[in-house]
Length: 336
Image (tube, rainbow, N blue to C red):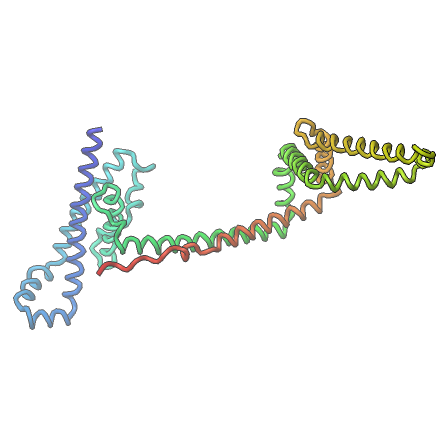
C-alpha cells in the first residue's frame, strides 16, 4: 500500500512538472509565433529596441534549439512511460502505447501544425489532476459551460442515432412479418401460463368490483325477470286464483323464488371471484388464448402485434426527441 501511494505521488509530481514544461513550451511557441509577424517586429524595434534585439538574437534565431530541448524531455518522458506500461502490462500488446497516446508522439515532431497537439496532452492531464484533487475546475464558469455544451452535443447525437435505429426497426416491421411472428412465437407463447394467470386474476377482480357496484341493480333485474316468469307460469296462476289465500301464497312463493335465485347467483359470483376457485375463469382464459394463437387468428394476431409494436416505438421515438437540455436552467454569468 505504501509503495502504491509513493508511486502515485511520484506520478503526480511528474505530471505537474510536465504540465509546467508544456505550458512553458506552448507559451514560447505563441510568443515566437507573434514575434515572427513583421508588424510586431516593427513595433518592438521602435518602442523596445533592447528587448527586440535580445529576443531576436537570443531566442528567435535559435528557437529550434530551444524547442528541441523541450522535445527531448518529452521524448524521454514518453519512452519511460511506455516502458512502465510494458512492465505493468497496462495494454493488451506492448506496442499499443504510442497509438493510445498518439497526440504525445505526434506532438514531439517539431513541425508547426503538429506542435499544437501538445495542447491535447495538457487537456488530457486535467482530468487526472482533477481526480487527485490537486485542481478543481468543476465550479468554474468555463468548465460548466464546456460540460453543458458537451452534454448538448452528446444528447443530440445519441437522440438522432436512436431515432434512426427506431425508424429502421419500424420499417423492418412494416415490410416483414418475421419480427411479429417471432414476437408471438418466442415472447408471447413462452409466457402463456403467466399471461393466463394474470388475465384470470384481473377478470376476477373486475367481476368482483363490477358485481359489488351493480348488486342492487342486478337484484332489481332478477326481481323483474322472476315476476314476469311467475306471471307466465300456469300453476302459480292457478294457485293465485284460489279464493282467500291464493294471492298471498303466490306472492310469498314469488319472493322465495327471487331470494333463492339471488342467493345462488351471489354465491356463484363470490366463488368465481375467489382466487382459491379460479379454475373456471382459468379454463375460459386458456381456451381464449388457444383460440387467439390458432392458425385461424394468426394473421389478425400478427397485425395486432405489429400495430402495438409500431405504436410503442412511436411513443419511444417521441420521448427520445424531447430536447431535455432546453429544460436546464441557463448558466449564470461569470463574475466580473
